[in-house]
Image (cartoon, rainbow, N blue to C red; front, side):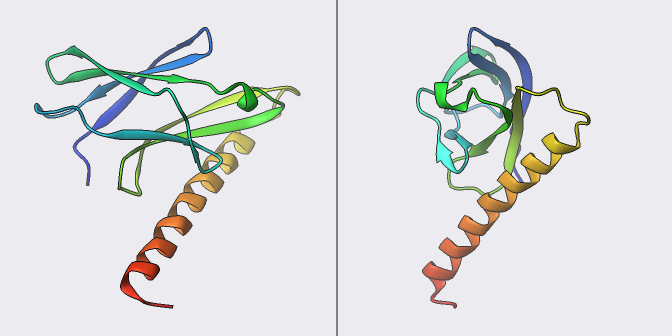
Length: 124
């Protein structure tokens, strides 16, 4: 289980920002994924003692109708630290579609991790 926690700070000018609390030491290696692809341009800057500012530029191709879900994970691990969603287009009748999109994104991440594990251990 990770000792890292991420809380949403804001989204402004196409950049999502979060606050990462972590034990002292070097900055953790994080990656942000959208539809299974790693988002480019993610930065992590020291904000205060044991606190880091995470900045995620929203890819232009992610700005489209529907719910676009982004997952923040520690590199090499399969558990999401947090997620955020971008909703555009037709207003959502319920938040249920956003939750389903998050579940799909997390399931895809778990499937990739399981397949990688099976490939590494030689299991079929």
